Image (cartoon, rainbow, N blue to C red; front, side):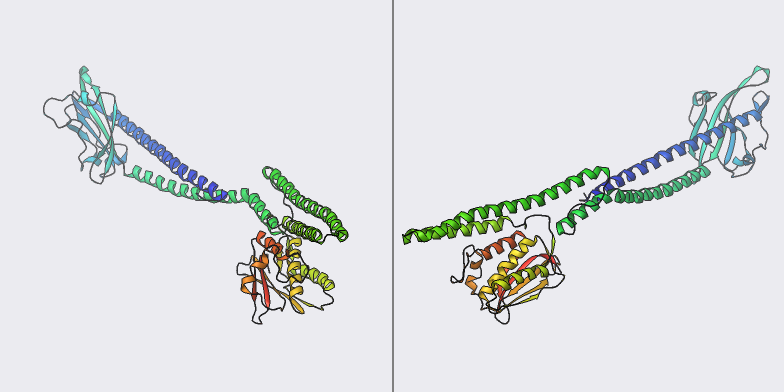
Length: 461
């Protein structure tokens, strides 16, 4: 069974057409054949009546008929129309000239004993039969037995036989069958074509709806924009409401979490500042550790919660311009280190997702590069073979990271350099955001033995 709606509808309609047309052809052929048979039988009856009208009994038991009949086919050998008159014993008493070279069927069976012709062919009834005259010729016969009242009030029984070759009628039936097959076959192909075009036209709004939903997922458009037929208008409106609600909910969720984080950090800052008045060093150290831990948890959970990686609705974000924002901020933070920033990202490189997530990824990675690298931070881009993913490479020029620590640093709270400030959650946040987009992050080294952080994200160049 086809998986597409168009394929299923076309298959059903094709089966209906393929079943209906042969049945219709069979019915039409049977009706036409019956009309041909009825016409032939009527013609034979008329010929029989005409032959009886020409007959005359001049003497008792002697029936006279002219040698030549008005219908010229009775007068020509092998014309396909024959006539014969027999008496009550089945003996031929007159034959048409067309039947002189053939043997017509005898109305009286070749059996022993006396046979009454009236028992075989009741008087006044027309009896029709299909008979194989020869191996190559099939005829239709009509036989009627009459009681002839001749002169002197005598009665004699005669049987009139009219035979007609079926060759012309069989040829006519075959011609009708061939014509019927030709036209029904052409009609079937035409109906299938029309049906396919009708399905494509009727289901085009559904395809357009699916395309627009894909465009929304890729970030090309934000809402459904096409006017749809009545049946789909409500669906499109509800989808737009759902999309708008999802976007507003995400913004509301992000703002609420940021407000919550701010509300928690403020009293924590007050407590942290009040610790300077505490005389007991042990208590002071304990409180300080727990406050630091609470700050880490708040920051970490906030960054995880606001990530839009799991949302099916994406945006197209220019990576080069977003990276410039990160570099501008880092230049102010690390002005004393005089770090140079090299943005080698392609101008057409796009990220399919939320810009805040991209800024979080680039910001954390570039910040770590500034802390642990030398005097230059380089970011490069490339595309994968799938054309649906991009690769970002952050190079800081620092010394390589040991293999045993390359996985550890992506764990929450793990830091390679305890001397630098920070809470050790930056790379774990980056790892979670990348994972939410079904991407990948890894640490490698280039030919110059420099650190290279390689990030794969959904996007294109």
